[in-house]
Length: 314
Image (cartoon, rainbow, N blue to C red; front, side):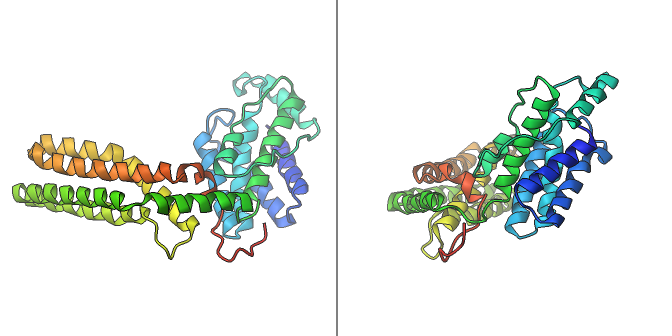
């Protein structure tokens, strides 16, 4: 789309959401900036850029950095709007430019979809354009950008319904973190210790590295268990942080064990102790994640701030 169209969309959003003048100006600056970077193509791909900018904008909003929030969001909207152009591609030169000029002459139409949560907002940003004519393209671009902006600039604290969902997940986490789960975790720790000690006797350097890795993983993994002094929000956020780490470890640890076995001649039995120890902890982590319902509230955990007094305005 033309720079004038990107600016028109940004100003239209500012008017619809009653944004302050300085925030709207920042939204405009962000919206027109990518064309000066010449990081083409803008009309396809760019999903990672859009997602990163939207998440950055929400984080800035939570920190009360509204102008920075608007700039990040405006940059995302540039790529979102360009993806909605269904006419001739940029490789077709004059035909593409003429189509974008027709878009610029169309009026702004569209309403907010009333999105809530991180995942819904990100997914809506990639909504496929119906296409067909210049005015339809502009309406789709404006509707998507307006809906995402409405979600990003929404309340910093969750609604009562979402709070209840998070509280319920927190209670379920305490309910399912039973003595049996702690026992399995302790058994896994014994296996890890035995495996690490066995490797240490065979190769002290590799043994110390494996031991250090184990200590680091255990230190960060233990926060998955609920702590009374933390709120439900904090406990469930800890669960998500641990699960994100273990998703990486699911690929990293088997690769590490194969490398140690083939390159450093570490005995397979020693590695099996560590492997089964980590496997048991992997099972405990994902058991608590799914049984507590933490997987169902992740979209809200990373989209809102914790509430502590219950007096925050929504």
